[in-house]
Image (cartoon, rainbow, N blue to C red; front, side):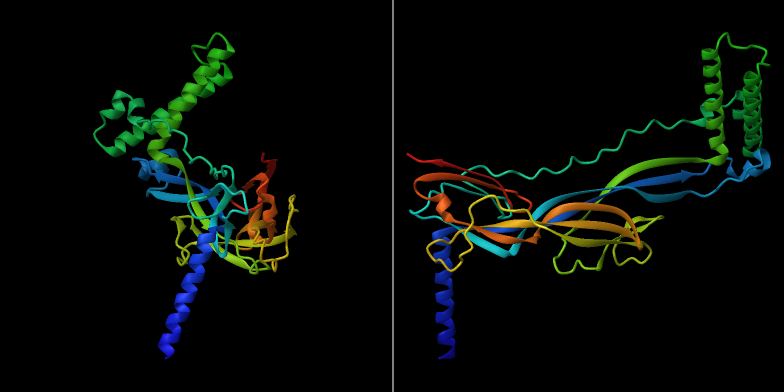
Length: 349
């Protein structure tokens, strides 16, 4: 008997759901999701081939092992929407209302009625600036250096060449060179060429650091009710490894704090909050709330963003009288917050 009763209850529930779907088009209101983009600089150090001789010939120590280091150089953020499973509603489709089409995003979020919905535009993918081709210091070495029989001898001759370049630059700067340029422009060109030659030859001792910039994205959905003085772990970052898993204690923690600013815009449209009125099911929309998100490195704030989030606002119901038989109402919602962006009504003949 008990199983039979449960069976009939299930059938009635199924019929109820099917009746709702038959009478209207289901839709979700959105929940706002943050996309936090980190601009990360990667510095790759390669030691010079004469690093071991730097102290001996140049009186300057040099790192003799390769290394990689990361640092965050920028933060940016944009928002998108995911469907809020707790906010599922129906647009009535019947003879009493002039609802010709219902626009929904691919995730089921309502974007428009009787008009085209607005699509969400996201920032263009980050493209790093092209890097210059690497320079081979051997192209700037004399024949004597290249013909030396050992690495130690090549390092000694290269160091001597560096000292000669410095001496020539000093003579030009003091006006004591045997062949002085005719004007200041030529002098600057000669000095720049000497600086470049010295810099390239110094790489054989001091090594070279190549910097690359990459962008990585982190998604976060703020939750209402958890924002008061609560820091949520956003990501972990290591100077040696870059962005790491949140459970990797080798990375320093970065947190996010959400503050509800208690700002909700007014709805500039006719509303109907009488939910008990059965003959007017209404069109439910969002009034989003404004929040401030602060990213913290430990306890130090490093970046803040202010934006409207659907889950921090409240629901409002548009009267379906707006979609009566004598008028055509075009409703467009914000695809990220579910708020009314535009509503226009024109009479039907």
